[in-house]
Length: 103
Image (cartoon, rainbow, N blue to C red; front, top):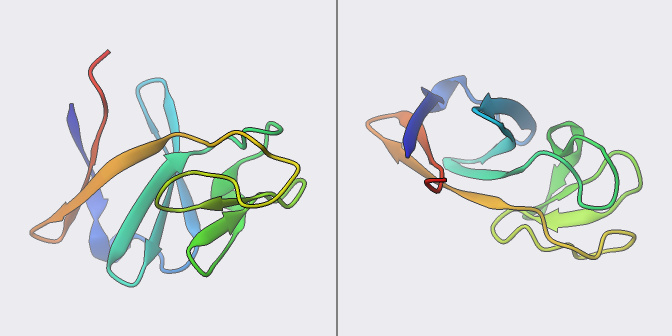
């Protein structure tokens, strides 16, 4: 299922934004003109990744400092050891779309 999210120019640069699509809480990040989407909940603790600091292709969990790769969702530092889900994002005619797996 492909869902329209927002115009690209409405997404702030270099920080996260939380969106909810159905039952999915998603953290979206705009780095330049690239947009990434991860599950918003840290795999270690119930913290919002959309509220974390973004740097060098990753986001840092604001609660315990685990870092997650924006492309793969894989953790690169403890205490998290499990990845967070990633979502396919596309930008078409200046509009950001998110693709969710059919359930």
